[in-house]
Image (tube, rainbow, N blue to C red; front, side, top):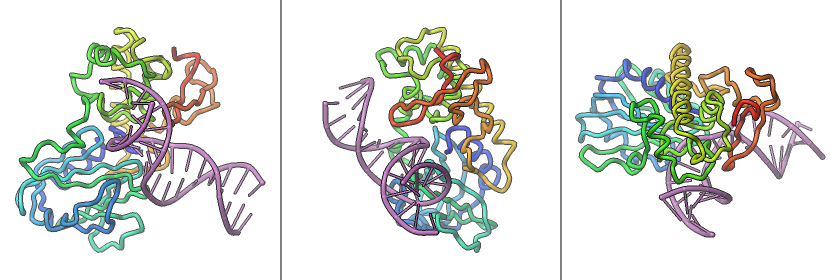
Length: 274
DNA sequence: AAAAGGCCCTGGTCGC
DNA sequence: TGCGACCAGGGCCTTT
C-alpha cells in the first residue's frame, strides 16, 4: 500500500515525464472511487499544461495552467492504487479507472480497491478540505523531536496509532509506523504522553531514516511503473517486523509478536521495544 | 478535544 | 470444487 515513500517515488517518476507537458484530455471509466470523480474532468484538463508535480502527505498534486482555468489535479492512491504510462490506445483492464492523456502517452490509474481519490481544485479557491486538515511533513525540518514531544502532550493513546494520525504528521502508514518504532526501540503500546523528549528525538530520527531508506530503495526499483503497489506493498522489501509474526527478531533473536491496535495489525519485538 | 469503532471496496487466502 | 468468513488498510464519519 502506498505510504509516503511510494508516493514520493511516484512523484519523482512522474515529474520528468509530464512537467511542462500539455494534457490533451482525460478518460474516466468509473463514476467514483472513494469520492465521486469530477464528471467533466476531460473537459477541465484539456489544454492544461502541467507546471509542477508536488506531493503533500500521500497526495500527488499536479499544478496545471491554461485550459478552462488554472488549478490542481489531486490524486490519492489509497491502498491499492498505481499509476503507469501506457500507449493511449492500449485496452484498459478491469480496474483501470482513469487515463490522463498526453501527446505521446497516457497516464493510467488502476485501483482495484477503489480507496483512491481523483479531484480537481480550481486555482484561487481555499485549500481543499482534504488537504487543509493535514499535519506536518515528516521529512520537513519542522518535524523534530521537540515538536513531536510537544504535540503529544495530552495524547494518552498508544504511540503507534498516534503516529498514523495524518492530522498530526502525514504519510506514515501501518508499515512504516511499525518499522520506525522498532528502529527506535519504542513499544507500539506505550502511551504517547509517556515517552520522554529524548526518546522522541530518537523516534523522529528513526522515522526520517526509515522513510529515506524506503525512498532510496524505491527509486532504484522503478521500471515502466511510475509506481508499483506490488505484493509486499512496501519498498522496504526487507521489513524488520512488519509481516514477520512468529519469526525471530534480527536484533535479539526473540519472537516477533502480532497484536491489533485500532482494528489494525501491529508487529513488534517485545524484547527490543519498550 | 481525544479516542474508539464503523464504513467504503476488492482480491486473496483459508477452513470446511 | 465451491463457498463463505475473514483479512488487508487510509481516511472519512459518527458516537462516546
